[in-house]
Length: 448
Ligand SMILES: Cc1ncc(COP(=O)(O)O)c(C=O)c1O
Image 1 (cartoon, rainbow, N blue to C red):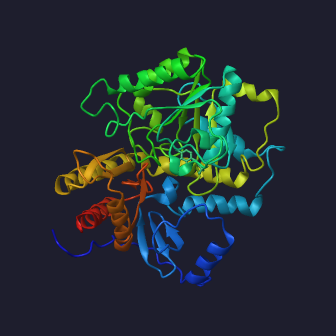
Image 2: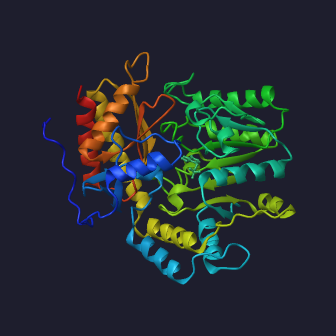
Image 3: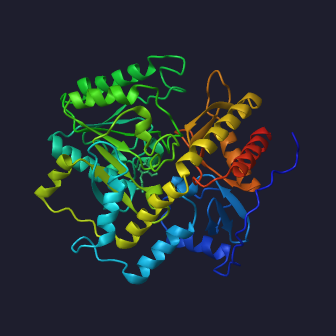
């Protein structure tokens, strides 16, 4: 293996010279005037001022391969020219009216989006964030079923709002406030760390039986809903064993509940094989929630459900000022068009295969890699101190994460112990980018 630093593939985009406030000034303003809700991502925080497709540029003009896409939000590429064009056209003409008037964008977009979903999932409600979408899904499920209890999974992330923080199940993201109100967390169907592993062909059934236990022992036997990400995102790209979701959906429906798929990270072809992550599990949910990649960086989210379930909202008025905003919907339509036109599902599948193949080779070379997993461009590499005990290698993960940034690659990290590298790039990533990313990983992981 050469000791040369891996080279970013060439790129035509020349960033404009940055002429805004200095790095130090921005840092000072942030620290002085913004809530301390998040810790900076790097020891020396990055200031990113420009983007083009899979690349980002900092204030000094340095280019990075963005392998996390603003936390899985850049689906088709930073400032994708077609999305930008449609947003600009709509911004010039009309930015906002809200739902009290008709507008063609929201109506046309609802039809387009519904056309991407299977079964009877054909009615859309638009909002601005994943937390809002999951909050609405909970409301719908409780109204429709007349039940209160909701089953979610340990290690899930469904948002940081008052109701969605209840669903989220990782102490790092839960403030010390009353949190339950009918939400129960079943053990996580994690075949790497959980009770039943990759080598157990019945793992899916066994984890699903735990859901049934929660229904039987922790609820009145009737539930409003089950909610799960199709692959856990913030939790570190955890892929459930085969049959888990299918059986779980059966238990939940037997208990009168609805099944909610949180597609905030896994939707819009990211998993490569299908448009939606749940399709990999052979299930059709009753409610699907989406955000992030839906707008490629424009605030947009949606809940899609059946006409029967949506009808429960007619008993009152529900209002979301920016829901279905003409500019956001213009972006949403453009994203759907670009995914099809540029065949991004196929690219997610092919580049995803290359990544996984590369990870397996790295795993053979680096003892610290305990598990590699994912589907399409929704992947993770879990680092452990010892493959037998699986003790999380948190500090090493942080070191690799920082080193990757110095080598020109931005990734995420996740899981309860922050020991999983999360790699979920924009779906326009190329084969050369993948090669570069794997070389950078090899170097960063291999260094002491
Ligand atoms: C799976 C999942 N659901 C919901 C959310 C919440 O979305 P938002 O941050 O837009 O409220 C997130 C955010 O990371 C997510 O990953």
